[in-house]
Image 1: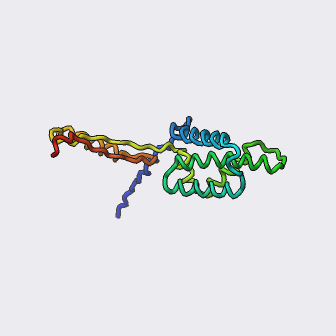
Image 2: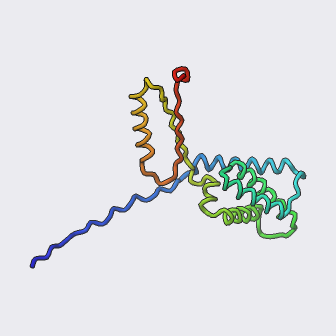
Length: 179
């Protein structure tokens, strides 16, 4: 009886995901939108009564807007909520060892808890969501080029990625040719 030795090769490890060393443009855009909303709330001044009920309503608006993927409205609401949280902290009169960042951190933590980490990261564009659009001419005389464009688009779409990418296909043609 002979015995055979079988060597199993271990599966190759996938390459480690590279961490960003700089924030994405989408994240910076999100921060800009929030900062503008804080300034808008500050400029509005006394038009709003800052209260815990107002903060609760703002949180509900952020959650609903995020579920509906209306991130601009959600970020504007976040800016107003941050300003209200700061004003409430100042109005409470309690002296703590905390600067204005404490109410902001508390408010942000409550939003993150309410949305969940994944939805919060999407809302804040932490991963820099990507959308790629393909505009392809589908005029009949372009059949060779159309097939080449389809092949290129298919290879791009089928390429494995670590992050989610949304794709948009926008066919166009000469409207005078299709009567």
